[in-house]
Length: 507
Length: 117
Image (cartoon, rainbow over all chains, first blue to last red; front, side, top):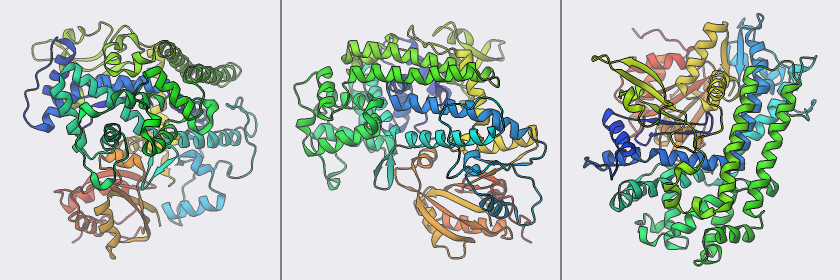
């Protein structure tokens, strides 16, 4: 666990995980949420203080991720493609795992299917040796021309089913990966959408620090991040400097000290939010990193023209829409919700007419339907009063008015513990895994809060948990880049034990 | 020969690449995309990947010896090693050759692993 790993909102499982490095850190987090007045920060060491202050404001940071996830077309589009890939790919993967004539399953399955028979043979000889006697899965070769599926799902198991599914998966994986990776290059690295999501969430967290702890801790938090060289903190600081200086700063002038009184927080917050408001009708500028790139290039040329000082939040949003010739934000948000609704309708129709569907498919549709309901609530509130979202102190003080995803406190892996009755004080619907301590009291290893405030979510929890288990279980075949090394090795062992298949990575 | 990737801090990867006795053939060095950088907790733009082929006849302890040598030139000697048959994450700091070898076996099950006499 690195220093900054307080957990996170996962756009893969739609739950906020909160992690702790120690019982002391958990106690601090708990105190910040259950007692009135600023929590005391007893540590002297800057790292220890940052750990405590960061921990006490993790939820605000992560809830902002959920809100941006709901606002952003590309996030929900990526999530839908992920569901679609799972729904299309799972029946095929299960068929391969149960095939008695296969004992090696190469993954990811699309990369394998895109190798020609000659390339596959060469790959197997390289990986397993020329004299290998294993029987690998041999799907139809799909690279280049082939029947490209026009629909979004393959239904039925007629001849050619496997080829149709693989073609469809290939198309969906291509779109998903491009959307997730982002398309803006910035020297040695690509600017992924995540940079914009972290910028927005760190802004929200900074104001949560101000509200929870006070001004001195707010300044301390910003100063700590400005010394931090990790990817997202460095980007955050660069943006603070831009909105402090109101002009581009040559690299030789770095590092610049952050003077919080000079930062144009209103403009910075509006920019971070505007990046999330893309519309599918606007082509490439629908995506957060593309929107940021346009704004950034214009702002370093003429900051005052892009961010005039006299405009309030909604007027500044409209000014950016007009300057960059995109669909006005209110129209964009509603049109995009409708467009995402078409995905759901198509999926529902295909699943209803498909004899091969099962519980996980229905769970996937129910979860996406819940997400779209959350989005519509958030969008209508946003349109009614953009300042309630963009004005950070107001957004912080009204968390209960916005949709909020479930929260999972991961106590067990940090050696922290808490009594069940204490944890119930935060919300009575909590789900626990319990053990008894020496005094025979019920203690929670982990606790899942379906909702912490009245906002809650329309995503059905049981369906979400079922879906997450299945998607994670089979992720290695369809999206192995999401797994860390130990998860990949665990998956290899499970599939060897359960199905007797060796997994072979194609890379 | 199986394709293998070594992902880690740029100093460590450069040291491996410049080690002419490191038994990785047809090697190329490239910048890592954001995902490994983020996963490994390094600074922006500081992670590189060395890709090449590793012969099945190579001895595990020979690889370990060169990894530990390269690790001495890096402040963050952490690596991810990925082959078609396995993938591991290893922190080389303060580890003996036996400890590193035990970890590497999972990612490189095809190399010779008998202990040196």
